[in-house]
Length: 97
Image 1 (tube, rainbow, N blue to C red):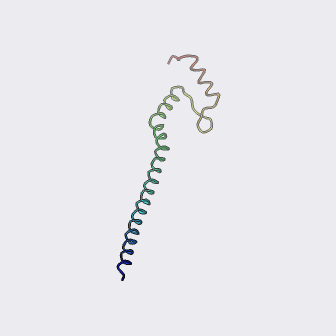
Image 2: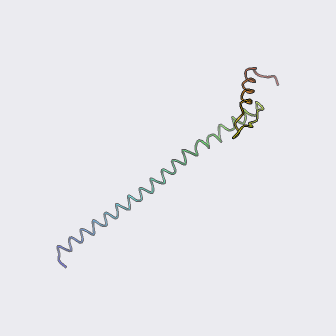
Image 3: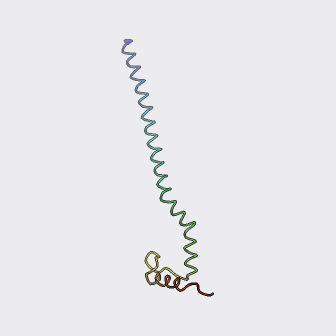
């Protein structure tokens, strides 16, 4: 084989290996970026639900228990009559036990 041809083939082979290495690194970075984005979005959506469950729901339950109000509206929201009753009970002031 001609030495010049052999030298060119070796250069092409080295470039091909370098290109393959770079493409694999790019593909790996894309996968890691995708997984990172999925994890971030899971945190963005799950963290408020967790915080509500841990901190806000007990307060809401305690508030509902002290007022004696039950939520009977759609999706568990109070109806306008129940909200009005709650407002009137707070305007009246604290009741004696």
